[in-house]
Length: 205
Image 1: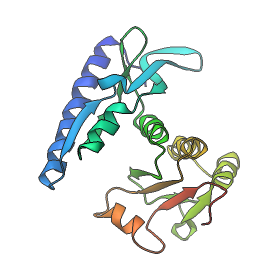
Image 2: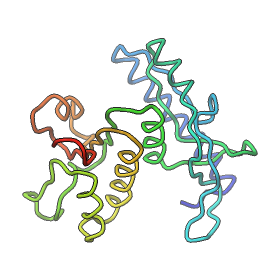
Image 3: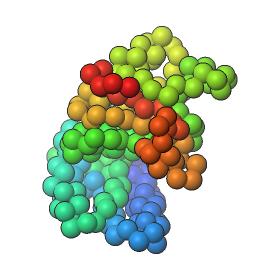
């Protein structure tokens, strides 16, 4: 995504508006939430990301996560809702891929679970064949699936992010349909779940 100076300003404005909208919805459910940016408390430090060696503007690659602000909020029983904007060593703002931000934060917190809510049910060996749904994979299986060409489109970077998080110490990563009501509860509290879970090779499926 090419992000020039004007686009960065608009992106930050829109993302912050979405962030506060999410805070409002979560608060309406009775959970105390706080919307923050990756710039708050130095949460997300970045460097400029290049695409094929090409400068694509204010698009950031995360270099450092300082989770202190998150720990402070969680300790006070506030749920942090993070806007994926960070800054570099010169304090310039950068747009960050939301999946990258989620993986980096989960790794920094040594999270037991990371869940991606998407617009698909999970991972299929063949997306046109709904009987080929994959309920669980280990890291090496996910890597082999990408290498074999089984993954396509937006699922490739999604799986790459899952693998990176697991390699960084997250125990389990879930990909599930965020359009389905109560999808997190159905995934975590039913025997088989409803999405695809990817686990470390050392764990039992």
